[in-house]
Image 1 (cartoon, helix red, strand yellow):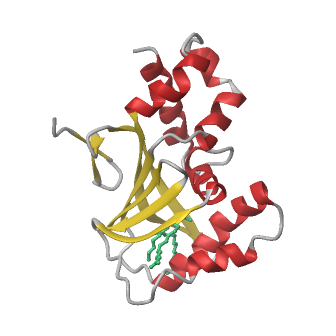
Image 2 (image 1 turned 60 degrees about the vertical axis):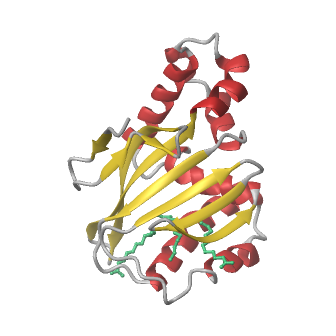
Image 3 (image 1 turned 45 degrees about the horizontal axis):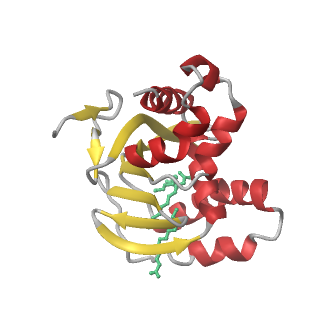
Length: 205
Ligand code: DAO
Ligand code: DAO
Ligand code: DAO
């Protein structure tokens, strides 16, 4: 089907299914406080997960628990971050004046804090390896679509408007990135709750 979900705050539209088997589980908004006083809407995002992988990798362990039991289950949340389920976070840029250098520093701040949280303190070099790959000649005007996809084997693949810009194998990076959206302190709480709820109901189908 070609149905889609439109975010009412930004008008960004997300297809219900990506790449045939990744289902949309939740949408949200990334905002950022600038100069300590005002919030800007940076991008809308949609979180997708592979239907087959969910059933294959999670139903044995969690299929018998009810949706509400899953809601409060810490291990279930951790497994979503760590299990090798195909997932995509699609970003649709809303802010019209995004420079690559501001993406780089936002990335160092957000993903960097998670790398430290999960991987200890010696990740500065890893982080710099990643951000040095955000090349200055990339352009991401309003409306650009960035897909961050976790492929089998903990490979994080990045595309901008459908064009692949890089692929990196790192379990820690995959986990750190997903933690921004569905971890303990997510960018958008409602999006995270929707993802958990929709995943739980998929497990019961
Ligand atoms: O310098 O004008 C400014 C404010 C820019 C804020 C940039 C936030 C970037 C967030 C990451 C975007 C990733 C695509
Ligand atoms: O919102 O802080 C955040 C994290 C966003 C991750 C964005 C990754 C963008 C990768 C592609 C950039 C290419 C210029
Ligand atoms: O050109 O070899 C290359 C790699 C370019 C990578 C650009 C983006 C990498 C993004 C990795 C982290 C995304 C969250």
